[in-house]
Every structure is written in structure tokens, then in C-alpha cells.
Image (cartoon, rainbow, N blue to C red; front, side, top):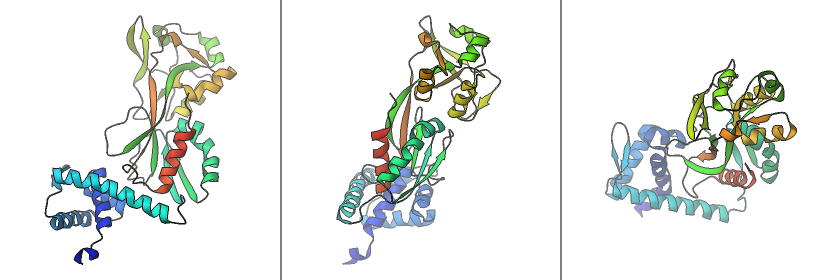
Length: 301
């Protein structure tokens, strides 16, 4: 009967968070505990099981073979428990505050227009949205889901692909009338090339010239902190900008922007992912509902 006094599901949840988040401090923040309490909990768990689950060092935690097996089964157990509670509850509907961080172009063109429909489907959810092209620490910012564009760094976060978009160089008709339309990558040196000033911005524009890959440095009299601001500057006729196709497709169709150097476009795609903390089915229902909604309704073609 001694085991009845042990909150095994609670211990298992904390242990899984330690592994997913890569340390005691991060797990402590996520679980509302102190790092020392998390460390002691894992130590008690190891003592009860009679085996070491993680090897500790000053920089990282490394799973032992026994710890790896315990973690993998633990994730499945927590997912099954979460699903059982959801199915058994008469109130099994998404509810609560959902904190979402998204890059600015995705936010303006996809996320914000979809908010009314999502909340109509899930009226018990409250959305807390922040738009920025800077990559945030979702644990420090207490964010449930972050939408990120471009290559993902290796991390303990889980990523769900939402789509991919072509990148293209565009300019306003008025700008091209005043400065001419570049026909080769070399000709860009005579143009105002609008750039981004956030940390993850590419240092130049990749193009193809005579079958070779080239990168044209960004150089102009204005920079901006997000992709939508660059979009607005291009529409205002300030210069050329390299933007996601979904940002400019309506402007191209309406003649407000004109693609340039499409023959030199390498056709590279910028992938967009929703990233979050958690493995498999081990997710709050509101997070799962939001991820499924984005996957169903976001169309970048």
C-alpha cells in the first residue's frame, strides 16, 4: 500500500519535462517548482526504482539506457492518461488562455484573419497573441505555441510543419519607373535593396546567375525589424524587397508590386513551423486544437 502514497503520475510528468526541456531549471519553470525540488524529485524517483535514470554534469543531462526506456514509456502513459481524462470528462472541450507567438508576416496574413473562426469554434479559449520576427524563448515567455519561419535550430521543442513559401524580389511600379528594372543580379548594385535588422535575417539575397549560385548583399537606406514592415516600404516605392510569396500575391495580382529577376530566382522555399513543448499526445487540449486548426486552415500555395 505504500505506493498509494506516491504521486507517480506527478513524478512522471516532472521527469518527462526535465528530459524534454533539457534540465532541472527549465522543468522547474514549466512546472511551477524550484530547481532543487525538481532535482530531489528525480533523485527520489531513482531511489525508489533502484536505478539511475540520468547522468548529471555541469552542462547537461544524459539519459541512461534505463532512463531512456522509462522516458519513452512515460510519454505514452501520460498521453494515454490525458486522453482517458479527456474522453471521460463531460467538459472535454478546449478552454483556458492560449499564448501564441508568431512572426509578423504570418500573423498578418494568416493568424489574425483566422482568429474569429477559431474562437467561434472554441469559445472557452482566450487567445493571447504576440507578433515579432525575433525568435523568443517560449519557456521564458510562457508561450504555448510559436510560429517560426526558416530553418529550425536543434532543440527540445516539437515542430509541426504548416507549409512552405517561395521567396521573391519585388518592387512598386513607381520605383521601377524611376530606377529601371534590373535584368541581372549584377544590376541590383544600382538599386535600393531594403533589408531586415533582426538577428535571424539573411545577410543577402540568394540568386542564380549563369548557372552559379550568388548572394547579393543587402544595401539600402532603410531597414526594418519585421517582414511586414519591409512589405510596406516596398509598396511605398522606397526600394526592392525580398519577401514571401504569400505576402505579395494579392499586390502582384492588383499591380501594386511587380516581381523582378524571376529568371534568376533559385526557387528556395522558406518553411514555416509551429513549435511547442511536449511529445506525442501529451498536450493540453487547447494547444492540440489550435495546432490542428492551423494545419487545416493555413494554405501557403
